[in-house]
Amino acid sequence: MQIHQGLPKKHSDAAVEMLLEAFADEFMPILRDEEKARLLLKRVINRNYMLYAEEEGKLLGIMGLQCT
Image 1 (cartoon, rainbow, N blue to C red):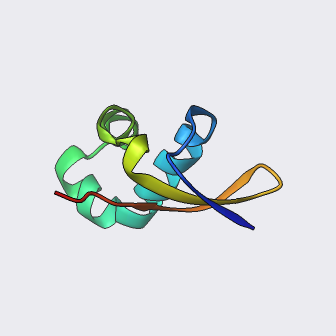
Image 2: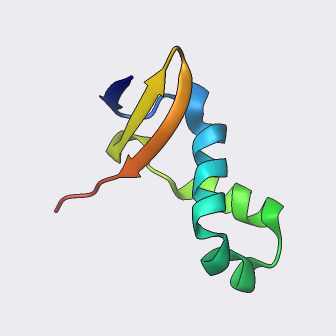
Image 3: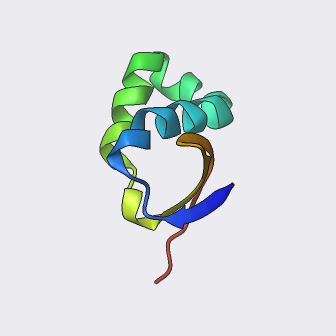
């Protein structure tokens, strides 16, 4: 397993699915539609602030960081 900074575009869809699964209880009462939630997440995540773990090219997990 390797940990990297800056999520590559090739992992964006898998990262969105991980976020949606993790935060469905928060998103779904407001958005009421999984496809809307996916589109929103794709638009707002900043891949530059993400750490990700992968193994043999497969995304294992993500973590978002933002420092000010």
